[in-house]
Amino acid sequence: MATHKHGMAVSEINVELDMVTLDADVRSATATFFKEVIQAVAEAGISTIKTYTGPIPWIPNALRIPDDITEGDAWVSVSSILQEVLPTAEQHNVSINIEAVFGYLCHDYYTLNSLFRLVDSPCLGVVMDPSDLYLYDRGFFTIEFESFVYYRRILRSDPERAARQSLAHFQDLRRYIEADDEFDGASLRTPWVK
Image (cartoon, rainbow, N blue to C red; front, side, top):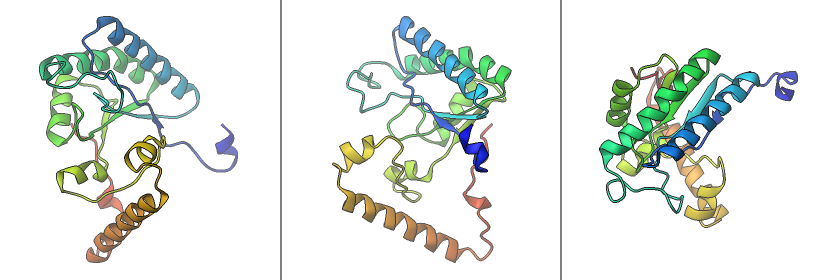
């Protein structure tokens, strides 16, 4: 990779999947696509994929729990896709980390724990972004402009509002660090949940 020439490496690839579906053909296509991504990521020398369970609320035709799909059927959909793709991840030594996001099937520690009880793999991990807890009035808020959808739709392309939120995040983080005499950065890292 070009980044390696400059002493840099890609730590993860974000694959925004919606694994909540009632359609067996969509489930199969999602699993096939995910396996292709895993193979491509491995060939590029990247060892981690971050993804989500869904349903993704800004996709117009996404199913809504419980309006369009029961929670039980959503768990069946997500776990069946992951059970199909995780052997490919294991074969290529690629970690699949699920981010818990407000409004998704996996949205907190407890729902992630349920996922790990349903799907067992040494390649299945978790991303606990503290900003995801902000909507529960816990944690601190971060802004990640990964695709600019948040910036365009939620912030309505308002750079001043984005800057204010980024500054507030930085101030919260600084207060946290200053309050902890023994802070070394390790306390912000989230271990894999098993």
